[in-house]
Amino acid sequence: QKEVEQDPGPLSVPEGAIVSLNCTYSNSAFQYFMWYRQYSRKGPELLMYTYSSGNKEDGRFTAQVDKSSKYISLFIRDSQPSDSATYLCAMSARTSNTGKLIFGQGTTLQVKP
Amino acid sequence: DADVTQTPRNRITKTGKRIMLECSQTKGHDRMYWYRQDPGLGLQLIYYSFDVKDINKGEISDGYSVSRQAQAKFSLSLESAIPNQTALYFCATSASGGQPEDTQYFGPGTRLTVL
Image 1: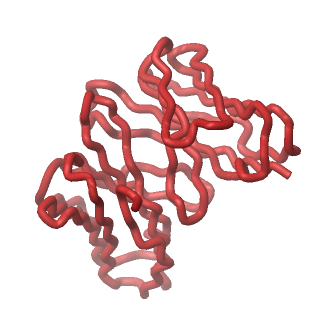
Image 2: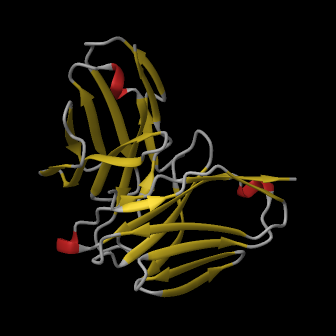
């Protein structure tokens, strides 16, 4: 079993829809949770960063962490065609200050005009 | 100019050839990483380096080697390439003590095909 599981999709939604992307994990030591966005033929770029449990909002994006359920989510409101990309969740346990990230497989999102 | 650059961007080679992928960064970060990305598998860590003298194996280091020539340069070598090493390779950097400390910045990737 992978430490981090993410549905690869693809997920196709109409413009303006609310999108929900999710990851589950098995390692209870994970404390830092990130979402990266990767456009086609580009490297991943950090989109959202959350420490421990709770919500974090940035514009149309909201990240949620539920450590009791080992479940994280990224919500995109009023989705736009420019949001079409692959979204990767990533996590860190911060043991020994290693800075190592464990990534999910990525979910491919297509927002249709 | 991009903060993290990778060369080459695309490479086609034959089984058994030695290949080197290079990564340079101008972010001043001390930590550097090499990942490979395969469809459906996400990003898998090959090697990582916390400074010039500190190099560590990642999840899938077999068949790969690395060299940290300077703080800004980290190279990945495939000593004898095989077809299942066909993948997209990414270099990344991060800063120790940065906020958030685990943020990694990725290069544009190298698409490697081994025939």
